[in-house]
Length: 266
Image (cartoon, rainbow, N blue to C red):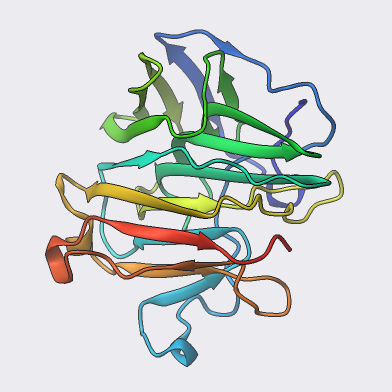
């Protein structure tokens, strides 16, 4: 697929130096559509949705998961099992990633995996992105139930290291990107409905069942200890859940693990 970063979110005046990479990358699969599996969050309302009973809980039309939002972040990491796509008709998309920035800033440094439905066919791949530059796919086999681990690390200056390892298929990549104006103001572990259609907007979410992130950490500590930890629920334009996000386990500052469960595509 030809990929474009979301036209309605493109940020004028930002400069991102793309990859110094240890790995080869390829264009996305050649089926139709234009989208990017990444970019900043699309928050609903103020971003602190007290109606759900929590001061640090937000609703978004494209992200679900957890984000540290009130610190300065230098690293984030997590592991997951690539969920299978339950495909019946039409095109749907779901990305799973770790990253820095994007919750309250206009860049995102991220890497992850994806399952897209093309009719009844599920397509799997892995990618990285230094938004607002376009995402880049890795030219490696990805299958349902592959075991992934990924880490995004700020190194120095404007440089970030994006590491992803498909343990099952026995490949890994470390990609270096230079991102100007990165604030390092958030760290996140996310399931996403990618943006966007040719005319802007969030794409339909793949039915991925339930998937689990484990060993989630920020700044070298358990994700539960991240400053301003915010639970993010993905909703549609009517405010209905598109997926649900479980509580972190163990509870409190030692929390590292949580699950996302599909509810609806649009």
